Amino acid sequence: MEDKQEPPKSQSPLVSEPADIKKFKSEDFPSQNEDEEPFYDFQAFVKLMKDPRADPIVRYTRSFLNNFLTKREFWTSEEQRKLVNDFKIFVFDKLPFYEPFKSADAANLLNAKEGMEKLIMGKLYHKCFSPCLKSQSNLIDKGHKTDLNQDAMLEEKREEFRFIDPEHLEINDKISSKLETFARLSAKELGRMNDYKAPRDKMVCALNACRVIFGFLKHLKLERDGADAFIPLLVYAILKSDVESLISNVNYIERFRYPDFLRGESSYYLSSLQGAANFVANMQMESLHVEDKQDFESKYHANQNALKKERYSRQPIDPHKNASIPREPYGPSPSDYILKPLDGATNIVLSKFAELFSPTSTSPEDYDGHQNLEGHNDITRLAQEMEEKEHARVLRELHDMFPDMDQELIGDVSIAKKYRIGACVDVLLTLSS
Amino acid sequence: MLQFKLVLLGDSSVGKSSIVHRFVKDSFDEFRESTIGAAFLSQTIKLEKHPDVTIKFEIWDTAGQERYKSLAPMYYRNANAALIVYDVTQPGSLVKAQSWVEELKNKVGDQDLVICLAGNKVDLCDEDATAREVEREDAQLYAKEQGLLFYEASAKTGAGVSAIFQEIGEKVYQKKGMEVPSSAQARKPLNVELQRPSTNDSTSCCS
Image 1 (cartoon, each protein chain N blue to C red):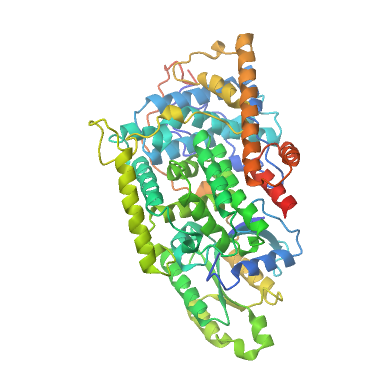
Image 2 (tube, helix red, strand yellow; image 1 turned 120 degrees about the vertical axis):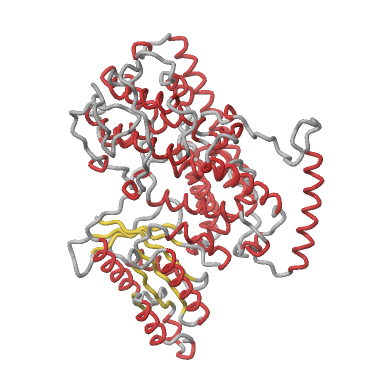
């Protein structure tokens, strides 16, 4: 098929398209059903993609990825947003024309869209997630640079105001001693955003962080205060956290999560997180509730002095390193942001599968479902180990949060709730109050 | 079904969240519990004047404390309606409400946004007439001048609450009825010059 003319607007500019296929809008197909727990299974998507009949979809995808990665060294963040979104619109429109997607039911089709987003963002992550571009900061565009600067600002402010108390943020004074525990747990969930590449997986971490806060508010019967109670706690959790690249993560979700999937509740909590993170990044004494100004200032200066000393001692001995930057100049390398999908076991499978889509990979014949069997067993074993580790982590954190609760009970709840920490917290809070 | 975004603004002590809870609780449609928490709620209503029209409100609560004012633009962008609540027993809360009206008019423009001003806690005045600090007529006059919808209500007794949402729904429907908001369509088109893949590229899908 030749590409004879300029692509129509909704077509992804990075793939060529058979011209004779009638286009459907993605809205013609049912979108996420909010009543039910969304069905999300990357392996199911992989299975469909491995079907020989899915070949056109595989080719579209590979063509897009290849072009994205090779046509230009750097796209701006806005161009990336546009390119990725256009490709998704394009390929989502195509899915219903090709088996096995054609005969997939609505839930499976939706899952395929999720899988596709996860697949392409896994492959493009190192070009799209601003912290991965840190080492090339002289070459990158304003959008990515702004992400990095805001992350740095947020981290600086967190240190500058690390001494503040809940009252400075007008956190309801009924809030008890458990605040620190919950703030830490919420921050931990936020931090897990850095473990995932897919926008959806990052979003789930963000939602879990908010869920933990609401779990706490429910426990205190303050849930009804809505945002008046929630926002100060979210700000507090961010301030007391050591989450890296929070603003980059939030902006990445906003850019690369398919807009139809980023609606309603998700959109609300992402906006809240964005607002709260910006609030911390721009924090000044004036943004806080301060009754005793003198006392506050003396604490502020004491902290400044302590920080100076800490930064000095943190300074690397290596004279070649930039003395004005206390942290590692380039932060974690992209390889630190390893891929860990939420549905635990699929991690390794994904990375193996994603290799098929690297620009160097050649024809579809190179892969079929029957690669060497040993490799497959390794993958399964590794995936199981990872899942077990993840479960152990959830159990540990829940024990920390609910030390008085029967361990067996926590275990049962975790199994029932499939080790989803947010859901577990909800149940345990209900049981403990 | 039409889906509208409503942002909830007002001082922290005026009971804006309570108004929404009352609305959600009293609506005869099934109560749709949100999955995370009460800062975001959604509720479906049928318009009394157009019984065949169903509207789903997505209600975005904001933090009312003055220091979190800077977060508000994150919430009111792309909103179809704003409900600004004050407390009829606290004149200061009306002043705050008025500053929200100003901000919305400057930043959003009322072409696109239905704004409703609502005085809450009228039940306190029923118990004790001297409790009232903001006269209904004064607030109503201000709302009229500004072209806002206006109601007095009590989240506690439920008086006036459903009328607020009926009226907002009606007005938004008149304004926006025909176009269904879609975030995908709302994205600004961006013209990026892109090279198309060459057809002899071995990885191109249509070679």
